[in-house]
Each structure stands twice: as structure tokens, then as C-alpha cells.
Length: 295
Image 1 (cartoon, helix red, strand yellow):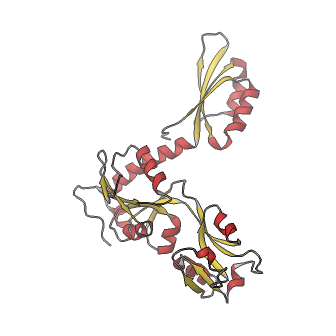
Image 2: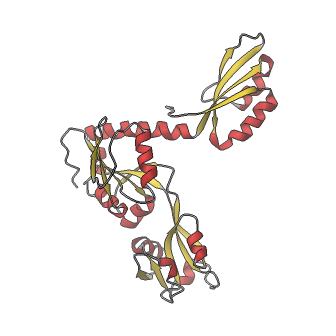
Image 3: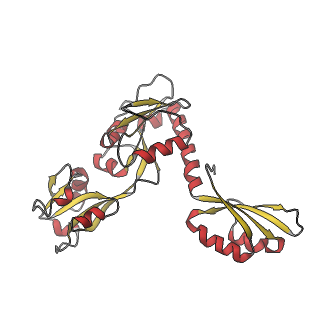
């Protein structure tokens, strides 16, 4: 297995989707971690001005192969494509966008209730590798019809009794009068690495620098920075609600008997915590979004 040829020791190449459902969020993420590069027009390769990294813009279904064979060191791609292409790469981080599922679906009024019911049926899919791998794991070889698009219409046209296809919201299944009977894989955008690149000390060092930045951005999304005023006697009840990342910061105010409390609240239970803080005696609560958070 080879790794990408570059002009500088430790220089990395990262493959991202050129056009598609992951593109905008991926570019936004890369800019949010401070990378400066151009992504306009028909550009295929862009060099970062402030980090030893070049970005290759390609087709999403080519990215697993680019990473697996060492054309690039890193790739941002849907986990479903890693599963489909069956490449041996290192998954470094889940990125928290591009959520979807690879599912088995059948006509709404059919009697099929599970994958086992489709054992002797034709199944249409644009993910033949994933479908075959899944059904083989159940102990039988599926009768697959591979389509490049509009897989959902196959049962209505009489081409197949069921389908294996990717869905984000399920709306396309509903529009084609289909229902999901099983989920093969839950997917989202992931950062993956070439194994040889991870074993190269200079490249690994820069990969870890990127991971540190990504961790800081993703951690910041999980918290809100909160400042509030409270009477001193309310502090025990407030600190029971918001212990902070380690402990809240408490600053005396000019008004005797009052303090300002600075802390971080998890996004997942933000509103419940705010209600408890108000009940505990907090007032003048100011909430800010975090840009980066290094834990």
C-alpha cells in the first residue's frame, strides 16, 4: 500500500465530496477549524495556505478508494460508502452531519415483515456490495438487481419485491408507497485515514493536529457559555445545577451579597437547566455560543 506523494515531509492530502449532500457542511467545517483554501469553480485540488494540507475534490463514491489505496491520507465521506466499498481504513471521527440510514424497504401493502421474508425475492439496490454483505451474513445469497438511480420505483414497476436504499428522512419511501422493515446501517459523515499514513510519524503528527482542531469545534457545539447573577445564599443550589466543566467561576459583584456565576451548559439539556437555575435564584442570565472549546 502506498501513501500520497507530496512535496513536503508530513504534507497531507484530504479528499472531500466535490458536489453533493455533504459538500456544504464539509467546507463549513474545514473553514471553522481555521483552514484557508479556495473551493470555487472547477477546482480539483486546492492547497491550504496556513496548514500542510491539500484538498482533493472528488466523487463521493471514489473517496473510500482514494483513502484505502493511499492516493490521499484522509477522506471525509459517508460511513455507508466505506461499508459499500469494503475498504480497510481507520475511522478517526464521526462528524455529526449527513445522517442517513441504509434500509430494506418493501411495498406498504405487502406481507413482508423482515429481511428473512425476502429470501426468494428479487431485491433492487444501488448499494449491491452492502446488500450482498448483509444478506450473506443472514446465511443466503440475494437475487440482486443493481440500479444506478430511482431504486424506489422498482417494486411499483414489478422489477423487485423489495429494495435496499439510503434514506435520510424516509420521505422518498413514503412518496413511493414503501415502508422500512429493517435498517442495515446507520450512517453519517466520518473522517477516515489511510493506515500507512497513520503509521508515518510526520503525517500522523499533522493528522493529530487536525483532530485537535476538529475536537475543539465539535465540543463547542455541545455547550453554551452562561453568565448569571445571584445572591450569595443561592450559590449552593445553583452549583448543584451547573457544576461546570470542572467548577463554575464565581466573581463578587459591586453590590454586596451578590455574585456573578460563569459556567458551561450542555446543549442537550440546556432549557431544563435554565429553568432549574431560575428556580434556584439565578437572574440576568446571559447565554453565548462557543466558537472553540479545548477540553
